[in-house]
Length: 251
Ligand code: AMP
Image 1 (tube, rainbow, N blue to C red):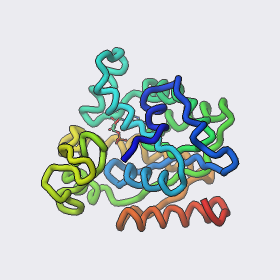
Image 2: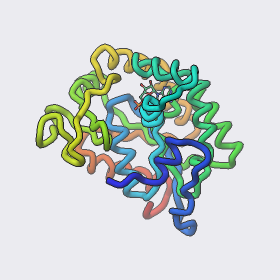
Image 3: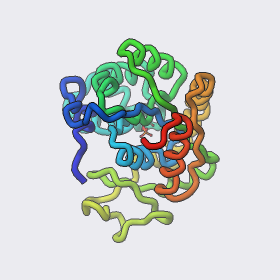
C-alpha cells in the first residue's frame, strides 16, 4: 500500500503541503471520528478516507511515529511515556501538535480527524483553532459499542509494525500467525493494547472523552453509528448516515 502524501505532511509537520494532489473543483469534507479505543475507529477512518478520497489524520499515529525520532523534546518524551502507560497525553502537547499541523486542517482535500479531541478542553481548543483558520467541521461521527465487548477485542488485537494493518487473533487472524498478509512484516501486540493498559485507556475514555460526544451533540454535529458488524458494512452505514445528515446524494 503506497503512503498517501497527506500522511507525510501530517506526521512530519508544518512545512509540507499536499493540496496539489486534490481536485479543487470537487467538494471535500471535514469529519471528526469519536469512539472508544478498539471500537474499530482506525479501520473505519481508512475505509472512509478511501471512499471519499480524503486524508486520515490520526493523533495516535503521530505519537507512535514520534517514538522513532532520535531526538525528542522533553514535552514529547513525557507524552510518549503517558502513551506507554495508556494515559492521555496532556492537552497542551496534543493541541500544540495540532496547531503545528494547521496546514492539514485547512487543506482543500478535507480530512478525517481520528483520535482528537479526546477531552472537553481539546474540543474547545479545536473549535477555536478551526475558527481562526475559517474551517468548519461537516460532522462528528461517533462509533458506539459496549465497553466490555471492546476490552475483549483489544486484548486480541495485533498490528503490523510496518504497514499498520490491524488483525485479531480470533476474529480476523492473519494467514500465517504473527505475519502481516499485506507486507509480510511481523505483527506486534501494541504496548497500549496490553490488558493493564487497556483498563487505564477505558477509564480515560469514560472520564474524559464521553463528554466530548455531548459537546458535539449540543452543536447538532454528532452522528452516532452502531459499530457492530463487518468493516465494509459499517462504512456503508456511516456513508448513509452522513448523506442524510448533510442532505447530499453522494459524498
Ligand atoms: P490511539 O491510536 O488514538 O488510540 O492513540 C494512542 C495513544 O496516543 C492514546 O492512548 C494516548 O496515549 C495518545 N493520544 C492520542 N491522541 C490523543 C489525544 N487527542 N489526547 C491525549 N492523548 C492522545
